[in-house]
Image 1 (cartoon, rainbow, N blue to C red):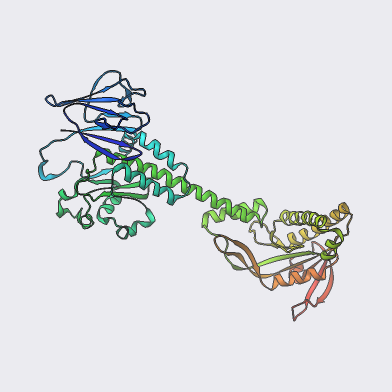
Image 2 (image 1 turned 45 degrees about the vertical axis):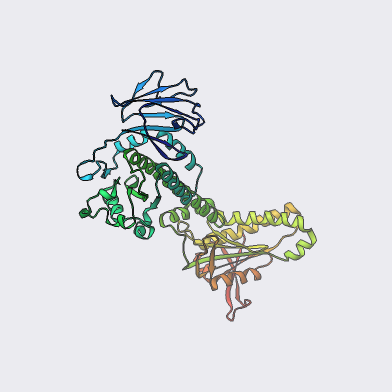
Length: 493
Protein backbone atom coordinates (compact mmCIF):
# COMPACT_ATOMS: atom_id res chain seq x y z
CA UNK A 1 0.00 0.00 0.00
CA UNK A 2 1.23 3.48 -0.92
CA UNK A 3 0.40 6.56 1.14
CA UNK A 4 0.54 10.01 -0.47
CA UNK A 5 1.41 12.80 2.01
CA UNK A 6 1.06 16.45 1.01
CA UNK A 7 2.76 19.20 3.01
CA UNK A 8 2.58 22.95 2.56
CA UNK A 9 3.33 26.07 4.62
CA UNK A 10 -0.38 26.92 4.61
CA UNK A 11 -1.97 23.94 6.30
CA UNK A 12 -1.69 20.61 8.05
CA UNK A 13 -0.31 17.59 6.20
CA UNK A 14 -2.91 15.63 4.26
CA UNK A 15 -2.74 11.90 3.56
CA UNK A 16 -4.32 9.85 0.80
CA UNK A 17 -4.23 6.10 0.19
CA UNK A 18 -3.18 5.73 -3.42
CA UNK A 19 -5.73 3.76 -5.42
CA UNK A 20 -4.69 1.39 -8.21
CA UNK A 21 -4.60 2.99 -11.63
CA UNK A 22 -4.50 6.74 -12.27
CA UNK A 23 -4.96 9.46 -9.65
CA UNK A 24 -5.03 13.09 -10.77
CA UNK A 25 -3.42 16.00 -8.91
CA UNK A 26 -4.38 19.63 -9.45
CA UNK A 27 -6.09 22.79 -8.28
CA UNK A 28 -9.63 21.57 -9.08
CA UNK A 29 -11.34 20.22 -5.98
CA UNK A 30 -12.62 17.13 -7.82
CA UNK A 31 -9.09 15.84 -8.44
CA UNK A 32 -8.21 12.60 -6.65
CA UNK A 33 -5.50 14.56 -4.81
CA UNK A 34 -6.43 18.29 -4.66
CA UNK A 35 -3.50 20.75 -4.63
CA UNK A 36 -4.83 24.15 -3.40
CA UNK A 37 -1.88 26.13 -4.76
CA UNK A 38 -2.04 29.12 -7.11
CA UNK A 39 0.92 27.70 -9.04
CA UNK A 40 -0.92 24.45 -9.73
CA UNK A 41 -2.87 23.92 -12.93
CA UNK A 42 -6.47 22.77 -12.75
CA UNK A 43 -5.39 19.24 -13.66
CA UNK A 44 -1.65 19.37 -13.10
CA UNK A 45 -0.22 15.83 -12.98
CA UNK A 46 -1.17 12.23 -12.37
CA UNK A 47 0.12 9.29 -10.35
CA UNK A 48 -0.15 5.84 -11.94
CA UNK A 49 -0.12 2.98 -9.43
CA UNK A 50 0.57 -0.49 -10.84
CA UNK A 51 -0.64 -2.68 -8.00
CA UNK A 52 0.72 -5.89 -9.51
CA UNK A 53 4.24 -4.50 -9.97
CA UNK A 54 3.85 -2.33 -6.85
CA UNK A 55 5.26 0.70 -8.67
CA UNK A 56 4.17 4.34 -8.91
CA UNK A 57 4.83 6.62 -11.89
CA UNK A 58 4.29 10.39 -11.94
CA UNK A 59 3.46 12.20 -15.19
CA UNK A 60 3.09 15.93 -15.78
CA UNK A 61 -0.06 16.85 -17.71
CA UNK A 62 1.35 19.85 -19.61
CA UNK A 63 1.05 22.07 -16.54
CA UNK A 64 1.94 25.75 -16.75
CA UNK A 65 4.47 25.83 -13.91
CA UNK A 66 5.75 22.28 -14.08
CA UNK A 67 6.07 19.24 -11.86
CA UNK A 68 9.38 18.75 -10.07
CA UNK A 69 10.83 15.49 -8.79
CA UNK A 70 13.83 15.92 -6.52
CA UNK A 71 14.14 19.57 -7.71
CA UNK A 72 14.23 18.59 -11.39
CA UNK A 73 11.39 19.54 -13.70
CA UNK A 74 10.17 16.39 -15.41
CA UNK A 75 9.26 16.21 -19.08
CA UNK A 76 8.73 12.44 -19.21
CA UNK A 77 6.95 10.01 -16.87
CA UNK A 78 9.13 9.16 -13.86
CA UNK A 79 9.02 6.00 -11.76
CA UNK A 80 9.10 6.96 -8.08
CA UNK A 81 10.82 5.50 -5.05
CA UNK A 82 9.82 6.10 -1.41
CA UNK A 83 12.64 8.64 -1.03
CA UNK A 84 11.51 10.83 -3.94
CA UNK A 85 9.97 14.25 -3.41
CA UNK A 86 7.45 15.84 -5.78
CA UNK A 87 6.90 19.60 -5.74
CA UNK A 88 3.95 21.45 -7.23
CA UNK A 89 4.12 25.14 -6.32
CA UNK A 90 4.62 25.32 -2.56
CA UNK A 91 3.21 21.84 -1.98
CA UNK A 92 5.58 18.94 -1.32
CA UNK A 93 4.30 15.44 -2.07
CA UNK A 94 5.95 12.30 -0.75
CA UNK A 95 5.02 8.65 -1.11
CA UNK A 96 5.43 6.05 1.59
CA UNK A 97 5.31 2.33 0.96
CA UNK A 98 3.53 0.93 4.00
CA UNK A 99 3.84 -2.69 5.02
CA UNK A 100 0.71 -4.34 6.34
CA UNK A 101 2.64 -6.74 8.58
CA UNK A 102 3.61 -5.31 12.00
CA UNK A 103 7.27 -4.98 12.92
CA UNK A 104 8.71 -7.35 15.54
CA UNK A 105 7.97 -6.11 19.05
CA UNK A 106 5.78 -3.32 17.69
CA UNK A 107 8.76 -0.95 17.63
CA UNK A 108 9.26 1.70 14.97
CA UNK A 109 12.81 1.99 13.65
CA UNK A 110 12.55 5.77 13.99
CA UNK A 111 12.00 5.62 17.77
CA UNK A 112 14.80 6.91 19.98
CA UNK A 113 17.33 9.69 19.69
CA UNK A 114 19.13 11.17 16.71
CA UNK A 115 22.17 13.37 17.48
CA UNK A 116 21.90 16.86 16.00
CA UNK A 117 24.86 16.49 13.70
CA UNK A 118 25.82 18.83 10.90
CA UNK A 119 24.84 16.18 8.35
CA UNK A 120 21.35 15.78 9.85
CA UNK A 121 20.88 19.55 9.81
CA UNK A 122 22.01 19.89 6.17
CA UNK A 123 19.78 16.99 5.13
CA UNK A 124 16.84 18.55 6.97
CA UNK A 125 17.36 21.98 5.43
CA UNK A 126 17.67 20.39 2.00
CA UNK A 127 14.45 18.40 2.34
CA UNK A 128 12.30 21.32 3.52
CA UNK A 129 13.60 24.32 1.57
CA UNK A 130 10.12 25.42 0.43
CA UNK A 131 8.63 25.50 3.91
CA UNK A 132 11.73 27.16 5.36
CA UNK A 133 11.46 29.87 2.70
CA UNK A 134 7.98 30.66 4.00
CA UNK A 135 9.06 30.44 7.65
CA UNK A 136 12.04 32.76 7.11
CA UNK A 137 9.84 35.25 5.26
CA UNK A 138 7.48 35.47 8.22
CA UNK A 139 10.09 35.52 10.95
CA UNK A 140 12.34 38.12 9.34
CA UNK A 141 9.70 40.81 9.86
CA UNK A 142 9.37 40.10 13.60
CA UNK A 143 11.69 41.83 16.06
CA UNK A 144 10.06 40.73 19.32
CA UNK A 145 11.35 37.37 20.61
CA UNK A 146 8.11 36.25 22.26
CA UNK A 147 6.11 36.97 19.11
CA UNK A 148 8.71 35.23 16.94
CA UNK A 149 8.69 32.07 19.06
CA UNK A 150 4.91 32.01 19.06
CA UNK A 151 5.00 32.22 15.26
CA UNK A 152 7.52 29.35 15.10
CA UNK A 153 5.25 27.25 17.32
CA UNK A 154 2.17 27.93 15.22
CA UNK A 155 3.95 27.24 11.92
CA UNK A 156 5.41 23.96 13.14
CA UNK A 157 2.17 22.82 14.78
CA UNK A 158 0.25 23.37 11.55
CA UNK A 159 2.97 21.91 9.30
CA UNK A 160 3.14 18.72 11.41
CA UNK A 161 -0.57 18.42 12.12
CA UNK A 162 0.27 18.36 15.84
CA UNK A 163 -2.04 19.05 18.76
CA UNK A 164 0.52 20.98 20.76
CA UNK A 165 3.80 22.64 19.90
CA UNK A 166 5.86 24.95 22.06
CA UNK A 167 9.24 26.63 21.79
CA UNK A 168 10.68 26.77 25.31
CA UNK A 169 13.65 29.02 26.06
CA UNK A 170 16.46 27.68 28.22
CA UNK A 171 15.52 29.90 31.16
CA UNK A 172 12.21 28.00 31.41
CA UNK A 173 13.64 24.47 31.39
CA UNK A 174 12.80 24.18 35.09
CA UNK A 175 9.10 24.75 34.33
CA UNK A 176 8.56 21.95 31.79
CA UNK A 177 6.17 20.00 33.97
CA UNK A 178 4.09 23.08 34.74
CA UNK A 179 3.98 23.89 31.02
CA UNK A 180 2.53 20.44 30.27
CA UNK A 181 5.52 18.59 28.80
CA UNK A 182 6.99 15.20 29.81
CA UNK A 183 10.23 15.96 31.63
CA UNK A 184 11.73 12.52 30.97
CA UNK A 185 11.75 13.00 27.21
CA UNK A 186 12.89 16.62 27.50
CA UNK A 187 15.80 15.69 29.75
CA UNK A 188 16.86 12.96 27.32
CA UNK A 189 16.93 15.48 24.46
CA UNK A 190 18.89 18.02 26.50
CA UNK A 191 21.39 15.60 28.05
CA UNK A 192 22.21 13.93 24.73
CA UNK A 193 21.85 17.09 22.61
CA UNK A 194 19.71 14.96 20.32
CA UNK A 195 16.31 14.96 18.71
CA UNK A 196 13.98 12.51 20.43
CA UNK A 197 11.12 11.06 18.41
CA UNK A 198 8.61 8.41 19.45
CA UNK A 199 6.11 7.83 16.62
CA UNK A 200 3.90 5.46 18.62
CA UNK A 201 4.17 5.92 22.35
CA UNK A 202 1.84 3.02 23.07
CA UNK A 203 4.42 0.67 21.54
CA UNK A 204 7.28 2.04 23.67
CA UNK A 205 8.74 -0.32 26.24
CA UNK A 206 7.32 0.84 29.56
CA UNK A 207 10.15 -0.57 31.63
CA UNK A 208 12.50 1.94 30.00
CA UNK A 209 10.67 4.75 31.77
CA UNK A 210 10.89 6.82 28.59
CA UNK A 211 7.20 7.33 28.07
CA UNK A 212 5.66 7.18 31.55
CA UNK A 213 5.13 10.90 32.07
CA UNK A 214 3.99 11.23 28.45
CA UNK A 215 1.33 8.56 28.93
CA UNK A 216 -0.10 10.53 31.82
CA UNK A 217 -0.69 13.37 29.36
CA UNK A 218 -2.35 10.93 26.87
CA UNK A 219 0.34 11.62 24.28
CA UNK A 220 0.28 9.30 21.25
CA UNK A 221 3.25 10.57 19.23
CA UNK A 222 5.97 12.95 20.38
CA UNK A 223 9.09 14.78 19.18
CA UNK A 224 11.50 16.91 21.13
CA UNK A 225 14.36 18.83 19.50
CA UNK A 226 16.96 21.07 21.20
CA UNK A 227 17.61 24.49 19.68
CA UNK A 228 21.37 24.79 19.38
CA UNK A 229 23.05 28.17 19.11
CA UNK A 230 26.70 27.24 18.71
CA UNK A 231 27.58 25.20 21.77
CA UNK A 232 24.70 26.65 23.79
CA UNK A 233 21.29 25.02 24.07
CA UNK A 234 19.12 28.11 23.61
CA UNK A 235 15.79 26.35 23.79
CA UNK A 236 13.70 23.28 23.11
CA UNK A 237 10.99 22.49 20.57
CA UNK A 238 8.37 20.17 22.01
CA UNK A 239 5.60 18.84 19.78
CA UNK A 240 3.12 16.04 20.27
CA UNK A 241 -0.17 14.52 19.16
CA UNK A 242 -2.93 13.24 21.41
CA UNK A 243 -5.59 12.19 18.88
CA UNK A 244 -5.91 8.39 18.71
CA UNK A 245 -6.13 8.33 14.90
CA UNK A 246 -3.48 10.98 14.25
CA UNK A 247 -0.70 10.09 11.81
CA UNK A 248 2.47 9.22 13.78
CA UNK A 249 5.53 11.39 13.28
CA UNK A 250 7.86 10.11 10.57
CA UNK A 251 11.39 10.83 9.36
CA UNK A 252 10.32 13.83 7.30
CA UNK A 253 8.56 15.31 10.32
CA UNK A 254 11.77 14.88 12.28
CA UNK A 255 13.74 16.60 9.52
CA UNK A 256 11.25 19.46 9.52
CA UNK A 257 11.54 19.88 13.30
CA UNK A 258 15.34 19.91 13.05
CA UNK A 259 15.26 22.44 10.19
CA UNK A 260 12.90 24.75 12.07
CA UNK A 261 14.97 24.38 15.25
CA UNK A 262 17.85 25.85 13.24
CA UNK A 263 15.62 28.70 12.04
CA UNK A 264 14.48 29.23 15.64
CA UNK A 265 18.12 29.44 16.78
CA UNK A 266 18.80 32.12 14.17
CA UNK A 267 15.66 33.97 15.25
CA UNK A 268 16.67 33.86 18.92
CA UNK A 269 20.14 35.16 18.05
CA UNK A 270 18.71 37.92 15.85
CA UNK A 271 16.07 39.13 18.31
CA UNK A 272 18.50 39.06 21.23
CA UNK A 273 21.02 41.01 19.19
CA UNK A 274 18.35 43.56 18.23
CA UNK A 275 17.31 43.85 21.86
CA UNK A 276 20.91 44.37 22.90
CA UNK A 277 21.40 47.00 20.18
CA UNK A 278 18.22 48.83 21.22
CA UNK A 279 19.28 48.72 24.86
CA UNK A 280 22.78 49.88 23.96
CA UNK A 281 21.35 52.77 21.95
CA UNK A 282 19.04 53.70 24.82
CA UNK A 283 21.87 53.68 27.35
CA UNK A 284 24.17 55.57 25.00
CA UNK A 285 21.49 58.23 24.54
CA UNK A 286 20.99 58.39 28.30
CA UNK A 287 24.71 58.76 29.00
CA UNK A 288 25.17 61.39 26.30
CA UNK A 289 22.61 63.53 28.11
CA UNK A 290 25.16 63.90 30.90
CA UNK A 291 28.60 63.23 29.39
CA UNK A 292 30.62 64.20 26.36
CA UNK A 293 30.53 61.43 23.73
CA UNK A 294 33.98 59.92 24.55
CA UNK A 295 33.20 59.74 28.28
CA UNK A 296 29.75 58.32 27.56
CA UNK A 297 31.42 55.47 25.64
CA UNK A 298 33.58 54.64 28.68
CA UNK A 299 30.49 54.26 30.86
CA UNK A 300 28.71 52.37 28.08
CA UNK A 301 31.47 49.75 27.97
CA UNK A 302 31.17 49.34 31.74
CA UNK A 303 27.44 48.86 31.33
CA UNK A 304 27.91 46.23 28.60
CA UNK A 305 30.25 44.28 30.88
CA UNK A 306 28.24 44.53 34.10
CA UNK A 307 24.71 44.93 32.75
CA UNK A 308 23.96 47.89 35.01
CA UNK A 309 24.66 51.58 35.39
CA UNK A 310 26.61 52.87 38.42
CA UNK A 311 24.36 52.63 41.45
CA UNK A 312 24.14 55.15 44.28
CA UNK A 313 27.35 55.25 46.30
CA UNK A 314 29.28 57.70 48.44
CA UNK A 315 31.98 59.52 46.47
CA UNK A 316 34.12 62.62 46.75
CA UNK A 317 33.00 64.91 43.96
CA UNK A 318 33.42 68.49 42.82
CA UNK A 319 30.12 70.21 42.05
CA UNK A 320 29.67 73.33 39.91
CA UNK A 321 26.58 75.54 39.79
CA UNK A 322 25.98 78.49 37.50
CA UNK A 323 22.89 80.64 37.07
CA UNK A 324 21.94 83.77 35.10
CA UNK A 325 21.40 86.85 37.24
CA UNK A 326 17.95 88.46 37.01
CA UNK A 327 16.80 86.17 34.21
CA UNK A 328 13.20 87.28 34.81
CA UNK A 329 14.04 90.90 34.07
CA UNK A 330 16.14 89.87 31.06
CA UNK A 331 13.26 87.84 29.62
CA UNK A 332 10.85 90.72 30.15
CA UNK A 333 13.19 93.15 28.44
CA UNK A 334 14.07 90.95 25.46
CA UNK A 335 10.79 89.15 24.86
CA UNK A 336 10.22 85.40 24.97
CA UNK A 337 11.50 84.58 21.47
CA UNK A 338 14.84 86.41 21.69
CA UNK A 339 15.42 85.34 25.29
CA UNK A 340 14.86 81.67 24.35
CA UNK A 341 17.45 81.94 21.56
CA UNK A 342 19.99 83.50 23.94
CA UNK A 343 19.22 80.84 26.54
CA UNK A 344 19.76 78.08 23.96
CA UNK A 345 23.16 79.52 23.01
CA UNK A 346 24.00 79.95 26.71
CA UNK A 347 23.30 76.28 27.42
CA UNK A 348 25.37 75.18 24.43
CA UNK A 349 28.34 77.29 25.53
CA UNK A 350 28.16 76.28 29.20
CA UNK A 351 27.72 72.60 28.36
CA UNK A 352 30.66 72.76 25.97
CA UNK A 353 32.86 74.22 28.71
CA UNK A 354 31.90 71.35 31.06
CA UNK A 355 32.40 68.61 28.46
CA UNK A 356 35.81 69.97 27.42
CA UNK A 357 37.00 69.41 30.99
CA UNK A 358 35.49 65.93 31.31
CA UNK A 359 32.60 66.96 33.53
CA UNK A 360 29.07 65.63 33.75
CA UNK A 361 26.11 67.94 33.14
CA UNK A 362 23.77 66.70 35.83
CA UNK A 363 20.79 68.91 35.11
CA UNK A 364 19.57 72.15 33.57
CA UNK A 365 17.88 74.48 36.02
CA UNK A 366 15.68 76.82 34.03
CA UNK A 367 18.38 79.44 33.46
CA UNK A 368 21.34 77.64 34.99
CA UNK A 369 22.98 74.26 35.22
CA UNK A 370 24.62 71.86 37.64
CA UNK A 371 27.78 69.99 36.63
CA UNK A 372 29.79 67.33 38.46
CA UNK A 373 33.51 66.49 38.15
CA UNK A 374 35.24 63.37 39.42
CA UNK A 375 32.67 60.88 38.13
CA UNK A 376 34.81 59.74 35.20
CA UNK A 377 37.66 57.63 36.54
CA UNK A 378 40.05 58.42 33.68
CA UNK A 379 39.87 62.19 34.33
CA UNK A 380 42.25 63.12 37.19
CA UNK A 381 42.30 66.43 39.11
CA UNK A 382 38.55 67.09 39.06
CA UNK A 383 38.94 70.27 41.14
CA UNK A 384 41.24 71.86 38.56
CA UNK A 385 38.96 70.76 35.74
CA UNK A 386 35.94 72.29 37.47
CA UNK A 387 37.69 75.65 37.96
CA UNK A 388 38.97 75.65 34.37
CA UNK A 389 35.39 75.02 33.23
CA UNK A 390 34.10 77.85 35.44
CA UNK A 391 36.59 80.36 34.03
CA UNK A 392 35.83 79.21 30.48
CA UNK A 393 32.13 79.76 31.18
CA UNK A 394 32.81 83.39 32.07
CA UNK A 395 34.90 83.86 28.93
CA UNK A 396 32.19 82.40 26.71
CA UNK A 397 29.52 84.42 28.48
CA UNK A 398 31.35 87.66 27.73
CA UNK A 399 31.58 86.66 24.07
CA UNK A 400 27.85 85.89 24.04
CA UNK A 401 27.04 89.25 25.64
CA UNK A 402 29.10 91.05 23.02
CA UNK A 403 27.43 89.23 20.12
CA UNK A 404 23.93 89.79 21.47
CA UNK A 405 24.57 93.35 22.63
CA UNK A 406 23.10 92.50 26.02
CA UNK A 407 24.72 92.44 29.44
CA UNK A 408 24.34 88.86 30.66
CA UNK A 409 25.71 88.10 34.12
CA UNK A 410 26.05 84.88 36.10
CA UNK A 411 27.47 83.55 39.30
CA UNK A 412 29.55 80.34 39.45
CA UNK A 413 29.99 78.27 42.61
CA UNK A 414 32.36 75.30 42.94
CA UNK A 415 32.62 73.03 45.96
CA UNK A 416 34.29 69.68 46.75
CA UNK A 417 33.11 67.13 49.28
CA UNK A 418 31.43 63.79 49.92
CA UNK A 419 28.19 63.13 48.06
CA UNK A 420 25.86 60.26 47.26
CA UNK A 421 25.87 59.81 43.49
CA UNK A 422 24.62 57.29 40.95
CA UNK A 423 21.77 56.39 38.65
CA UNK A 424 18.32 56.28 40.16
CA UNK A 425 14.94 55.52 38.63
CA UNK A 426 12.93 52.86 36.82
CA UNK A 427 13.47 50.87 33.63
CA UNK A 428 11.68 53.58 31.64
CA UNK A 429 13.21 56.68 33.22
CA UNK A 430 16.67 56.95 34.77
CA UNK A 431 18.44 60.04 36.11
CA UNK A 432 21.93 60.60 37.44
CA UNK A 433 21.42 61.83 40.99
CA UNK A 434 23.90 63.69 43.22
CA UNK A 435 22.90 64.37 46.82
CA UNK A 436 24.68 65.86 49.81
CA UNK A 437 25.91 68.97 51.57
CA UNK A 438 28.62 69.52 48.95
CA UNK A 439 25.88 70.07 46.37
CA UNK A 440 23.95 72.52 48.55
CA UNK A 441 27.08 74.55 49.31
CA UNK A 442 28.02 74.85 45.62
CA UNK A 443 24.54 76.11 44.81
CA UNK A 444 24.66 78.74 47.57
CA UNK A 445 28.17 79.85 46.57
CA UNK A 446 27.00 80.73 43.06
CA UNK A 447 24.36 83.02 44.59
CA UNK A 448 27.17 84.93 46.32
CA UNK A 449 29.43 85.00 43.25
CA UNK A 450 27.40 87.45 41.17
CA UNK A 451 28.17 89.17 38.92
CA UNK A 452 30.54 87.07 36.79
CA UNK A 453 32.73 85.69 39.55
CA UNK A 454 33.81 82.19 40.61
CA UNK A 455 33.53 81.31 44.30
CA UNK A 456 34.98 78.04 45.62
CA UNK A 457 34.94 76.23 48.95
CA UNK A 458 37.98 75.47 51.12
CA UNK A 459 38.31 71.80 50.05
CA UNK A 460 38.46 72.84 46.40
CA UNK A 461 41.02 75.53 47.21
CA UNK A 462 43.33 73.03 48.96
CA UNK A 463 43.21 70.60 46.04
CA UNK A 464 44.27 73.23 43.48
CA UNK A 465 47.88 73.36 44.75
CA UNK A 466 48.41 77.02 43.90
CA UNK A 467 47.74 76.64 40.17
CA UNK A 468 45.32 79.59 40.23
CA UNK A 469 45.22 83.04 41.77
CA UNK A 470 42.81 83.49 44.66
CA UNK A 471 41.32 86.08 46.92
CA UNK A 472 40.10 85.07 50.35
CA UNK A 473 36.49 86.12 50.75
CA UNK A 474 36.28 84.88 54.34
CA UNK A 475 33.54 83.00 56.13
CA UNK A 476 30.32 83.46 54.22
CA UNK A 477 26.87 82.90 55.65
CA UNK A 478 24.92 80.75 53.19
CA UNK A 479 21.17 80.55 53.04
CA UNK A 480 19.89 77.40 54.72
CA UNK A 481 23.11 76.64 56.63
CA UNK A 482 23.86 77.26 60.30
CA UNK A 483 27.65 77.26 59.90
CA UNK A 484 29.43 79.73 57.60
CA UNK A 485 31.65 78.46 54.77
CA UNK A 486 35.24 79.54 54.21
CA UNK A 487 35.11 80.95 50.70
CA UNK A 488 37.64 81.97 48.04
CA UNK A 489 37.28 83.80 44.76
CA UNK A 490 39.24 82.53 41.77
CA UNK A 491 40.82 85.52 40.06
CA UNK A 492 40.86 85.74 36.30
CA UNK A 493 44.20 86.44 34.68
